[in-house]
Amino acid sequence: MRAWLRSPICASSAFCVEDARIDLAGTELAGREFARREDHRSENDWLVCWVEGRQFQAACGPRNLRESLQTFLSWAR
Image (cartoon, rainbow, N blue to C red):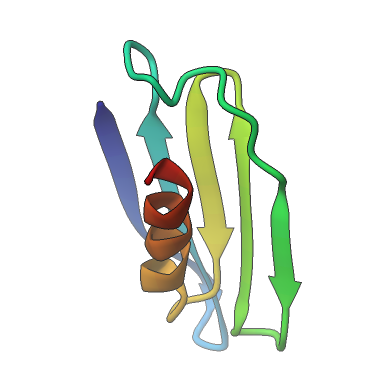
């Protein structure tokens, strides 16, 4: 399993996006159902997680990367 974490993408000092992708190919997670998760609490406090193909993907606000990875770990267990 491989994971990609990108540095924040900042359009301005007030708007940043974190991004994570975890490759599921060759694992027992490949093909497992995942209900898309979307939480939009504020401009900088939000989270969207989904599985596309054989990748778990997450996009989130600048302080929500931990929450997105916790979502992955909860689903993976």
